Image (cartoon, rainbow, N blue to C red):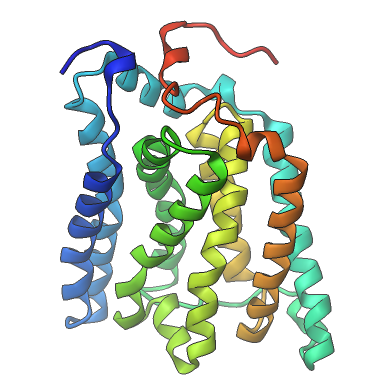
Length: 285
């Protein structure tokens, strides 16, 4: 394949096929084994998108694509810290509003507290925290290292966010049946399960915004993803309140898309994501 950056063709369908395949071949067997072995298989499966993403880049034959991945991972200068902080504050406000609204449906203000334990077990509380950190770091290397750009290169970021959110959501499907996972705990009520999968789509818009306003920085997304995972686990929201939270996230996403209309609907980047990589310039502060 030519090294010309403009000639590289992203392969989103092949990427998602392999990311799903190499995740699920570990996650599906985890359904039938003990929690300890299952936890190991889950971590291995969690690595799959990052591994597939990195392999795609390394064998692409595109120096621009390789340079782009390096810049997104180690280009700390890219991170717009004010925007990351704003995103964290926005999500914290979403959580507060969700809890307050949930009181209209009989939920308690005691949700404004930290839980004593995580909602999933794995091989212990320590491993649950490690899993949250790994998910925040490793998932973003996979999804932002190749995946989102492979879709966004061909369409607006609005439709990219919609498609990615749905695919990212369904990627978690086997976790519903693995003992000790957060998703398995949702199986007590079909509404909780539906809510989990629906909530990932509007959340995907917010993460895409974090990604783009920091010049496609993976580090920015890692920080935000870690904060979201931690808040979802350690704030004592009930499953019912998390259903309310999804509605609040949808409202926040609609407002975000309206305020960032040009970002989500512009087409200037289509087919040109790698064009800017030829320059070694650091973005202006």
